[in-house]
Amino acid sequence: MQNPEISVVVPVKDEEDNVVALADEIESAMASLGMAWECLWIDDGSSDGTWGLLRELAGRDGKNHRAIRHTRCFGQSAAMATGFRESRGAIIVTLDGDGQNDPAGIPDLVKTLVSEKADVVNGWRSKRNDNMIRKISSRIANGFRNTLTGENVRDVGCALRAMRRECVEGVPVFKGMHRFLPTLIRIAGHSKIIERPVKHRPRTRGKTKYGVWNRLWVGLADTMAVCWMKRRMVYPKIEPEAVISKKGGGR
Image 1 (cartoon, rainbow, N blue to C red):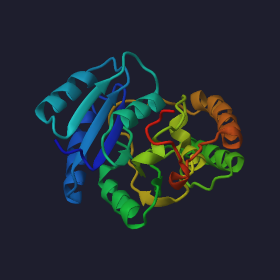
Image 2 (spheres, rainbow, N blue to C red):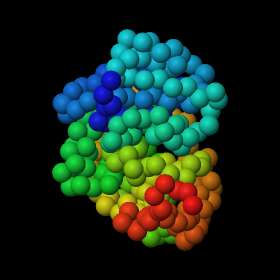
Image 3 (tube, rainbow, N blue to C red):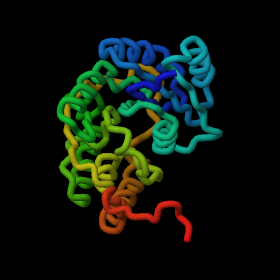
């Protein structure tokens, strides 16, 4: 069977109220692209009916939808990394499973990635549908991360993005990794990162897993860790024409 051209990676935890409707929206968005695709649903240890619904979805449509389940909750970054590893497409698209990212924005991100020959097209939420405290805290955190890491990414917290597969191969996995993907990808030598406005919707079903305070201090620590990575991590590349070996490998 031919590999899909695009892999959509969706981490979920306790999202039984969202996955069916979101799957329908993803199918509509991908149909408009006219490219072969798959959607990988990574259940990060849900305790509600999420896994049962995903199994039904994959059972009905094994061609496009695939369901993978962690043995327990490892966190959103780990779920995303599992999706990267198990995906087959040359282009990887990510979005949250809470329904706030609108899948209708996927075609524009993919088309921009291809036409501009970019490494990453990162969505930025032009109109945030969150309460004022969350908006302000997100803006402060985004500015803090950009200042310390030397980046100029408008909305690091937006999960809706399209990337070339090679950009995420070898990216270090740690809790909070998903909030630093553009920076980590640039560290690995992929420098063409474009931003496009995407629609952001209010959460209408289910409950948010994160608050302002339970992300603040760990976010500060993660930023310092990424700054260290930027200074110390290396990704050696070999010049193909400079590889010389003795034919046969023997004496």
